[in-house]
Length: 314
Length: 311
Ligand code: SF4
Image (cartoon, rainbow over all chains, first blue to last red; front, side, top):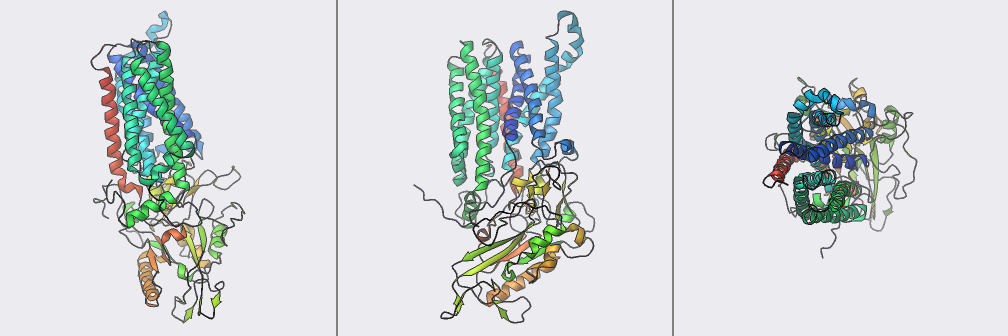
């Protein structure tokens, strides 16, 4: 056993401040990932002629991205000033970059979903939606491409801070988040589309789950003592639940998902819940790491004394 | 650390020029010499009064004479008190007019048998560092945090939308979103030291430095303050105070040096300061590259999910 490093602090008070963010922010990370990867499923379903999967993914993407705006605005100290986000575009601010990605993504995802809704109109009104349906293909492809940004930039947003367990996760967190997004979107596709159309959803879910679990392992191994909060308390419970749900959902999807609709729906729900638990768990772990001066002081001391494992490396 | 060596997103070491000011005046800053601090908290009070900072709790922390705890939305100067089982030394005063036990003059217990106190007080007035590479400013998505022509970092309170990103970004835990309902001045907005932008713009001294009775807090042109600090640390070392050191005076450190820097008598973490702070922007280019690979991987994975089989 490695002895706990001794360190000095000012009466045990934190050195850095935890973010003032609440559940809105991890919920937004989950919803953004779900939306981004769903747009990819939707585009693929459109090209390969899977109307039911396309409908689920397009409507799911719009619902998720709309809910994320609610969360993003609700989290502000001055919600009425949300539009100030669009005053500037700053590559040094992942939140600024993300806002602009969302600003480009949302209308495209919205157009694709609106076109989908017109297919549900009564027969004699179908003509109304024709122009919208004509552009929905290219719009959907655009949403799929930008969806990659929506699903992965949020990891940079967390890592570009002095919060120890977020910053030290920076090498693997984008992969964890992107893969978790794939698992969630795959799960939603399995819930909404019949088994004979949901093959790509099952494969995306299983692949996402596998990559997520592997990258998270690697992340924990590379974080030094700042990995501790990932295993403790609420964060630990959430991340254990995430692994169980994601693993079970993926195995179910591969083994039985193609045969039983009931199993497919249950697996899809487990994958969605697992993805949400990943975001909440990592969020919570970071908040805890900021509250304990150990996670700020010890890695910096090790760096100064040259004992750190990754001196001078990303 | 040059812009290039850092990977491209850090500004130059002259931050005002980097922010686009033409021919900026000399950079202003604070040199806080903690060897002269007597823990009177005049700076805390003067800062609160001048900047109309609301009351933020009257708690007893029960650890020392410090009931403020740390910097925050409504505390822009904070005096730390550390009681140590280490011998006190007679420190030279700043102006060379003789010796005084400046480290806790009033409160050290002199043991005549040994000729020295058997414990010492460390007192230090903390403040926003007005970093050369300021994480709070870098991550701000609205441009509410800005670099002034004097090289300082201030929040434009009418622009800030309270996103809160600067709070976890600051490596020192300085900036904070002010809580409270709409009756509280600037509630919901990020708040921190402005280096009294309103006062120094009029040629005045910041409220804390003005109120400090021992010149522990010194305000002026940063270049000159750095020189003065090097001299002071030399004087202290020569007088046998071997643990005297400067903190954030070095432009090669992880934040490009502080506009506010310190003379400390112990390791930074003893005062609640990070020993090796680094602005996260330094690694941001690599983080963007990693996210791009992950995002493209996700796209490729989604495409692969449709390849081959028809169901
Ligand atoms: S100390 Fe913190 S709040 Fe002050 S300029 Fe540096 S990053 Fe910003």
